[in-house]
Image 1 (cartoon, rainbow, N blue to C red):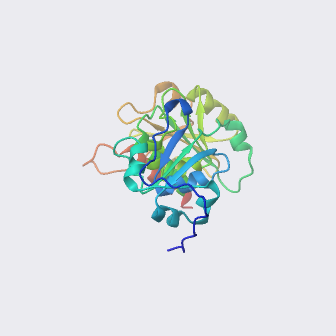
Image 2: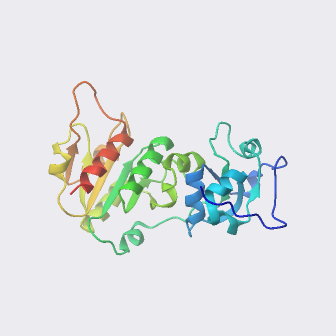
Image 3: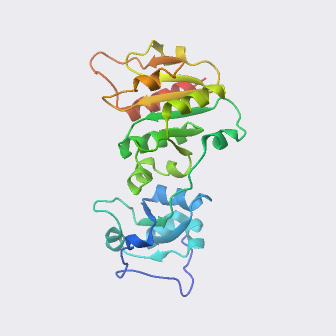
Length: 260
């Protein structure tokens, strides 16, 4: 346990008088220790307000003090957030992250194989957050989603991602099929992960930069998107189950690509 840093004289406190932020003030509430820690550490994230319990401040360590946090009790923080939010005593009001351009994200130098994950119309923030968490664990270069058919940046998404929303570039594009064409021109081998894939994933993945395309549960990958892929692959599972949850499939696929 870190030694708690004393709060300076004059620091704000808000044990019972924390007020809900008016919607007109703008901003996005992120909550949970991992999501808050990642937000505070992200230089691209503009933090407007930090509200924490004394215990959470101790857990967050020195990183929280430069943002002049307000001290509050658990129930006071709960009143700032949607009902049922599991905040662990930490919440941050921030601006949304600036939009990213895929070309700029992939222009950065990188050692070894680059992996990009493309999500074709996945809309559940819990699934997408879990995928982002796996992407952070396996050093994915970017997660690409369609702007109108993907969960927007939110507290729910950030909490499910356990900090990965601020660590993995989350790139919104207008057209997934066009983005796949662009990635192909950049030298990426594009793989559609599907139950009826032509081969096992390990057989489908050459030792080069990879795009892994995942479709929504039930609907799967759309025909036009799949046509932009170079191959399709499956994860071999028992006949006892029809399919895997998409976030579980993503974790298995990413592990397979990184285990060389």
